[in-house]
Image 1 (cartoon, rainbow, N blue to C red):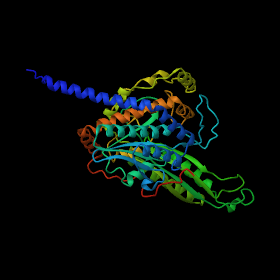
Image 2: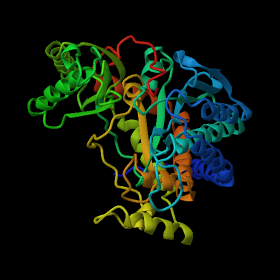
Image 3: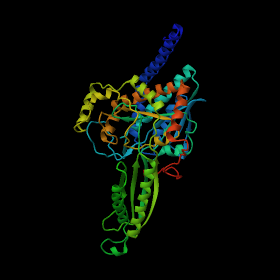
Image 4: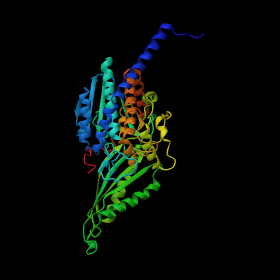
Length: 475
């Protein structure tokens, strides 16, 4: 025999549901009304295009925005001048929203649908000007909702510098700034709207520096010992390693200093390496072998070698408890709809992406939810995800099919297409935080899932060791 709930209980549940939806709709409308303001902030950071650990003005702008909204600011956390924490409220739960704002070196910085000369020092080809601003908007929106509705708990914004190779969040995790956080939320600019479980590769990076003896390359070559020979010998050996590492491993390098003139034997040369895999233990093994190759290269070329750890990140650990809530909120918010001007811009960009580029109309859609993902890049969010239950999303701030770190990403991120995608992220983050604040059971379930996924015996060991923040890694 079926049991039915009393009409009074059904009415109460329906009323609560309608009230919850109204509150969410009010937050969405509020963010819509402030979209122009946040677009201006994002474009100011876009114009600044400051690289990792050099984001003084970008960080200050976000700090000022949050302070004006009623947040207390803790500057220079974890020994990083451009890192900060902004906080409102007190007590449990503590919900963190992550924000980034660093640019990449050597990219064009124009919001036009054709490639321009990379004349600037840096460009926002990964959309972090949008990332930091949307997360700021979300944190402020949640703060206003908490204040209006007398919600208990703490909302925090973490200003996270130097994600692009500088591992800013790793130093922050290492210093314990996330230890009392219950759930962390983040997002990333992209070419599609998706909130499935994420994945990212573990990564170790270092600069290998070789020192030799300079001499006239024609007049007295026997007196020289080429530091560049050391770099090239290392590169040859590491390239031979590729046959003997897991198939899905990644190794990249760039020679950052190879000498100044062909007729001078270079007494200094430097090569910058990344090693990646979806399991950090494999990365550690690969990196140790790379060090041995560097030592052998120095021995064989009569040079000396030292290396400096630059970055190191864990793989990303998904938390499905929180991730599904974020997905449901993204569906509620919806995708990005282009106006006629944006359509024309997007079509020109799409033509540059080659055959097989998705229809630009896919920016309006939400990708289906998935509980697994293929890892391609790396992020220091990985270290946060091993410390606190973490969930994220991506939104269509770029034309569908646009790769990250490209001039096309810079262009779309510098105009209204980027701003619209940014506001989709801000709304989704805000609604997700609201759901978590109102559901202590969600926090408990998320923490339980984290413990199960990382293992009871897990001990956090930063991949970059105990070195101080690499504040000059872009110099």
